[in-house]
Length: 96
Image 1 (cartoon, helix red, strand yellow):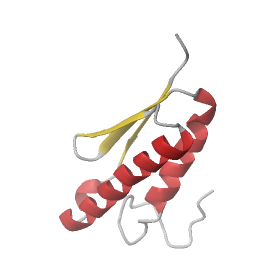
Image 2 (cartoon, rainbow, N blue to C red; image 1 turned 45 degrees about the vertical axis):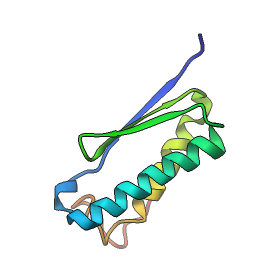
Image 3 (cartoon, rainbow, N blue to C red; image 1 turned 90 degrees about the vertical axis):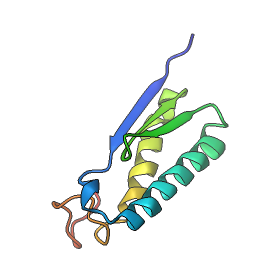
Image 4 (tube, rainbow, N blue to C red; image 1 turned 30 degrees about the vertical axis):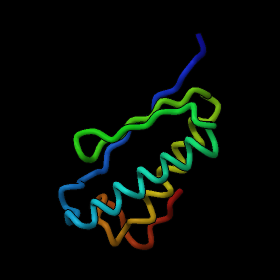
């Protein structure tokens, strides 16, 4: 039995995003999961979205968990500030 890593996340203040826009974000998130699983995890990872705006992923290679988290976060950041994922985000705020 190997060691696995679990990544969990939530779209902060997703209720402030219009329904049509949240569908775009969720579709992008699903596409990102598929790309990560296919290209990086070689089909061995599992991802799911639950409660509408929360997600979880099982990463069978713990050494890739940080990279996976960075990829997901970077993809979600493409939707700010036009999509209000957080009231603390500003246009000129650096990612790092």
